[in-house]
Length: 141
Image (cartoon, rainbow, N blue to C red; front, top):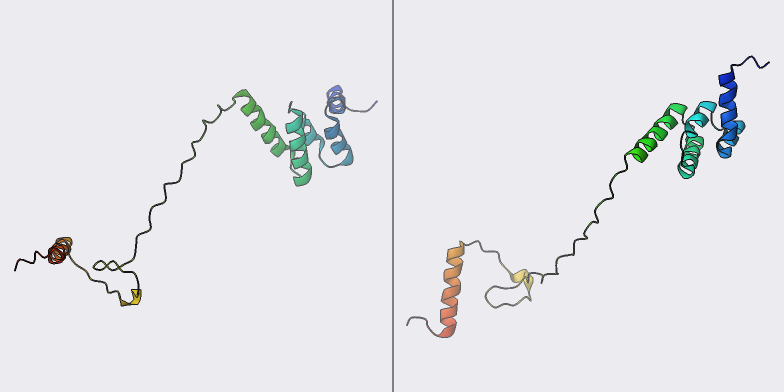
């Protein structure tokens, strides 16, 4: 009577008995029959509707939707273990900003009068030692 196989007719009836939103999308011409068949392989109503929305908006072919559903099914069969809680690193305590001041008098005013001097560490230590001794009155006189 229809010049179609029983399998062909049965597939169309399955579409009619499956998700009504998928059926309506096919009826309106938003998606193809092949895409609808792939969508109806998804058992989860929320995911199927999510995929339906993406297929309608993006005009995706049935092979793309098949991949989505296959990936979803694979993830359902092998659920990933929950991720361990991530410890939020506490920020390091604020350190006192380094003072930009004169190393001899400790003053910070008149920064345009500062000069840069390059010395070896051991020479700098010797100069500081001499200054301390001079300030203490131990000049070695």
